[in-house]
Image (cartoon, rainbow, N blue to C red; front, side):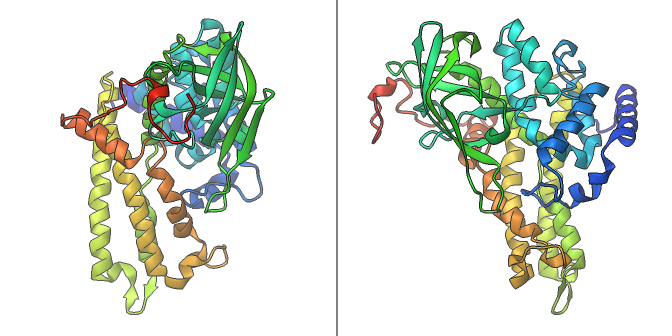
Length: 416
């Protein structure tokens, strides 16, 4: 591994840094810096509208979706240049939250499987933030087992009619388009009877119901489909090829999540450096220092594991399934750190507000949000399977329903 920029990379970094210094919305820098993990919002401004303005400015300067081809709204940059941009964008990257699913997952899927007309129509507007996309995969009975989904699409002439339900759809309440996977043939094994589409989220029959989260936010939703009509021209890939198409999305999802891993370690060090316990500063307590040291070692391991992926990108290689390690470890760390911080705070940990620094609810929000980090983009169990089977080469799990027709799988309450 080589942690130093090449001359070309150093030049790109300098150009990116200078552009950000001249164009970033600095009026939001302090507020974005203080946003607690899992609760990124602006007190007096709408996050989506501010994000759209920043995304538009980036697009005009050639910095939006910069790894995409120029004809689709990107810059044609290398993967390592994308990593450098994210490093330099810093706290302003939080403003891109409404666009991360579109840029990191939906866009690459449309680029890989869509028609040329579809790519030229939808990708530039996605890149510029003019249109926002969401991902319609998970269902109440099909989370980690996406292939077990029940939402159906039936062919009617040149259209498809969709009925069913999705859940945990981030950003559906402000999205313009969505990537939808549905079952088109229940008579074949579950992985073979799926087809991928994209649809207008304002289509008749689409109902979005926001889900209130434990931390007070409403970032994801239930989405219901009642006789929703989708033109066949909005199909991605062949009929029955939806699982292969979805692998493009899921691979990019884990890359996208892994690109901005949060562990809570810097926040924890700062917190312990200022928190007074009964016998002095928390950071001077041997037990606290032992915990901090353990997390610091793990954070360092994550950092250098990430650098392996960055080095691979720099060489033009494709990172492997090792990226699952980062998300698995960081999700657990985030929850452990937030729990320990709450223990140190005592009763003050239950308070929210800005009058007292100790009572701003930072770790409360982190704790309430941390379980989602262990679910989104693949649960801990799924990631452990990937690491075991594809990294360590261990025997695969027994999957008894792999070759069974979907409508023959015995599941309570499932129709044929």
